Length: 180
Image 1 (cartoon, rainbow, N blue to C red):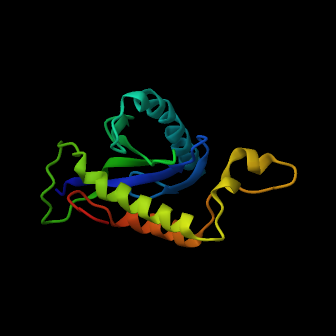
Image 2: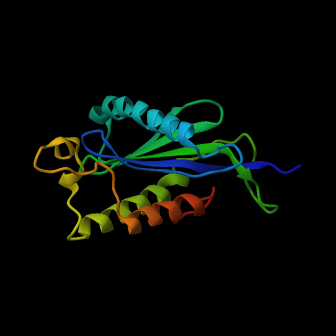
């Protein structure tokens, strides 16, 4: 019988005004990506915002917030805060996919903080590349801009390059992978 190893179930980018900028959901045998699941992940990401707020006054200069919450025995949420106030949340499915034959993963062992640091740095690199695009204006992706009469915009990131990079990060991550 083959064991199961953790995989990323969802990556969320949340704006400095706590608005969702991007949500990527990754399918696995335990996670069928349908609209109900997408809504559930959006609620899970929103539930992390209070944890960010509660830990912020006590957090040192390090941007890694580590484990935010364990939803159940299968899903765990990890967080990262940029210096601009944008939050990255990674939801890990602890039974995400079948373990490769030569896997060193031991069933029942949790993730270490370093296991996701490469993922967060890669997401931050992709986000910085997005911000460097002269045609991308982050202020257009705030709730106030989307509801203003003179500007009708989306609060979601629509950059194809950014979305593809987040998809690549989520699909290529595995336990023990240092950089993604």
